[in-house]
Figure 1 (cartoon, rainbow, N blue to C red):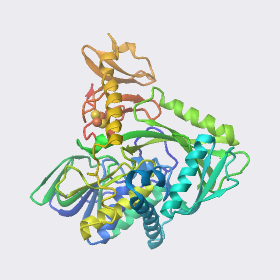
Figure 2: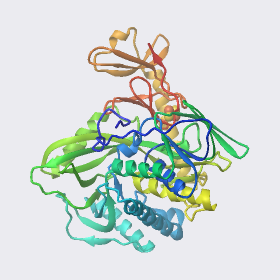
Figure 3: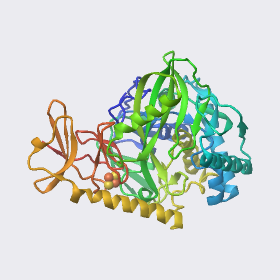
Length: 502
Ligand code: FES
């Protein structure tokens, strides 16, 4: 299968195409836009609840972050229970803990119901503090967990060859193969009467008179409800101000000493490193991740892999790096995801975004929340994750301000960008945003010399794209739209590609 970057993730050998018949004559109960774990889990659950559903995917199932995740399934989160207590109160922090348990329960129930072979394994997680600052953070994590009644305990040793000062063990976490799982669930969705259309780009929608009309490249569909399982909603949304896109890097490597850890591991750096072992085609591989940064905010994304590899080589007896890939996720202003009715909607359009590094858990949980709201009228998690909850509090205002300042600088790229008088100035293998004859262009020259010339202004809200040399893509730093060298949309919110200049 294909993914939203030039590098192959560990999971991409899983190939399967889906193509139900697209017909504008049918009316649906729910149209789900996006075929990752959120979209497929939600479609499957809604269909089982008797609703007629269709999934529209712009590329192939698992093309986005689901094909590039490291597939940790946790019920503790990047937002700690301690932080949740201080921001949302003890009761809400307890509800957050319950949400995590519910997500893993749903996942396991799906696996058991259909004997899904997706390498699902329950694992203990180990959190370890490397320095005094991290020890303080670890103690806070423990304290918050105690307050919400969440099980974790201090341990004397960890399974990773990393020097640490203090560590915690957390039982009952899990790992799996994301595409085997999503593909199998997609099969069950189809068996239950659902439809999947791949290569169907969403363009826009209208919500009027008790229905939603979805406009796609293939035609229009009428539906009672729509779900944007697109990681960030397409079009312009308030949620683009309350979430920020980030890139994370992963490598998969073998060991010379065969001493593979049997737990999930996390240090407490900001950004943290994470580790786990996966057996792929009979071979053990350690997956390590980290080096996260805001999308478009590095001049050399490729160097992030080098840093991650060097860091791993400091501790592990690395034999061979087998995989290296990156993926995108969204950080919310207050630390919690937005799952529920889209802020601009009259009540028929749903969204699920802002998952931080816990996309597999929140993607799965979204299926229950959205299904409950549509079929029962409410969900017990509805208020906690309400996409309309953001108030202009101090934290929220500084989040927006910080992003706005950075974005202003990036939009300022237009003024400071290189001016060239001839396209011959772009060397083979080089990619640059340049001013040429009064306009700005994103130009990539292949090693063969062939030029790919695009207008460099993102169609979404007019920021300037930046080159991602790790995935050979043009990434927009404002809200995370990404485009390939031909200008095709890899990830939204833009629903239009970069204009190609022949
Ligand atoms: Fe919003 Fe590019 S993604 S301007």
